Image 1 (cartoon, each protein chain N blue to C red):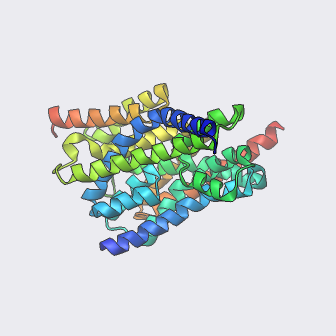
Image 2 (image 1 turned 120 degrees about the vertical axis):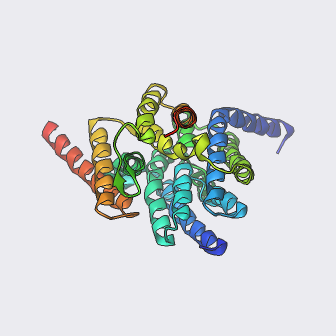
Length: 237
Length: 109
């Protein structure tokens, strides 16, 4: 590599890090909350950090911390994680067409760090030309590094904080669900699916279907959404 | 669960999280996914988020919990408004957490 090429690589990395700053500002406090809650749920500091390294999916990690704390069995935790993170398939499918020239190894590394937030950055940038790989990876690595930093701080803080309730930290997850739902709402069918899925989940819970209520309600509500959408499309076309 | 079992569970979580992130990049295009699956996947996020949200704010210990003493439910409305206005993650979360913390401080039940 010539000196000039090296300089432009570093410039690309620098601009990737800069573009990731808004993500960092969100990830550090939420990662910190996850760290505190994971520590309170009985995960060792090492396991809490490993989850941020290996799973790296914010809301599902907070959900899993809650399930570990409630003594849920491993298959329930893994299946719930799968359903909560299934949406990444769509994000991945949306950006993939822009990366046709990338090698499989590069795609594998890129996909590993694809989150709602990094997707949002890439999705607005890629249509006007995919930036140098150094910049794309700098965005992703900076984001995950801040998530790991937040997790580490949270684990350390969790050992100091006696009770999370006076700080309202037990409300982070419900508030995140609200924020993420609103970001996903595209049309009236989505609102209907959300209300139906939520109501069904509560109904199943009241009927005694604990822990599986979320998965069942999600599958049923999403399927009803497909029927509604196909039906309205057929009528309008 | 001991820490070793927790670690093995985390490995399982990592596998089921990575597969949906990776596969479309290798299959390259959303056009290779059947239409009904694309629509279904588009509905999964809203369905799963509300399937987790509603029990968190409407129930307590397997019982329906509605009323003015349900702090989580009351705080959901301002959180929703901020989420709608800002379309961001941090602002609504900060709003909700702050309201819950303040309410517990000044109006202990």
